[in-house]
Length: 320
Image 1 (cartoon, helix red, strand yellow):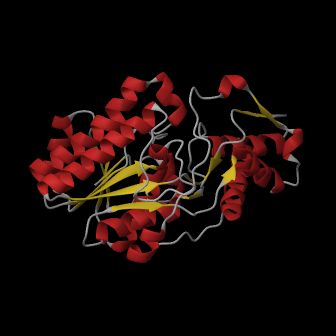
Image 2: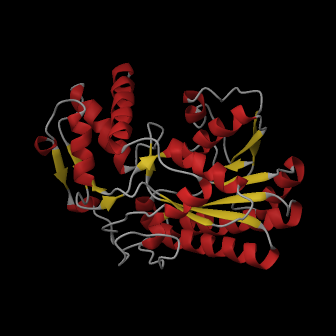
């Protein structure tokens, strides 16, 4: 079972599991043609082994009933209010969906299928403005947004359930991971989509917040594979998943404009209104543990990721 299956990560994870012979149950709170867009883009929305079920992780009774019916052997909890910027406008909902929602999943698994292996989607945002140049599994958390605080709560509850009840819960502390399936509200997709609009004459500038914020960006497809590997490993643990390479938002912009032969400095502006109340300046992950124990490593470079996103948005805007 995958919660959040209609999101970027859920779609890539389903695409990873279905060819392996899994029956994948995808939990959806509400369903529409638009909500299935990512599954359609990956060509799996109509797969015979994909079953969409109604449920809400903010409702323990709902999740418990679903688990009683499905009896999954693996549970991947990817559902959350995952946009950091929006968490400042919706701190209570973010805490409910991202924090308490995860706890509901753990408790429902404990009650209905305690032998199931569980993946919890933790986040590099939990590190906040870390004093460590690179962050690994032992780096202290210093959350700097309501989203990050909620993720820290969910992470610690996952560890607590693992230690207290012997449950097979692994946490993936994933650094930023992007793709053409990323939501338009996220900065990377905003960049590539606006580049496409500029090329097609539908925009003349790209307005962003903090251009100096540095992140470790990888491809969501690679990171979905890491989720699968964690759940298959006999010992449930926590793993940082990252590329170990950090670039600024401004540098990401230039990579995107390079794909279409334009100079980003002519089009990119920074606006104070788009700055967050508290921003994380630098994140860079050390995925040594994942490489050594899971055999995981990223297969897509940042340049390849940006080019894939720009090409997809050029085609999308052309069709529109």
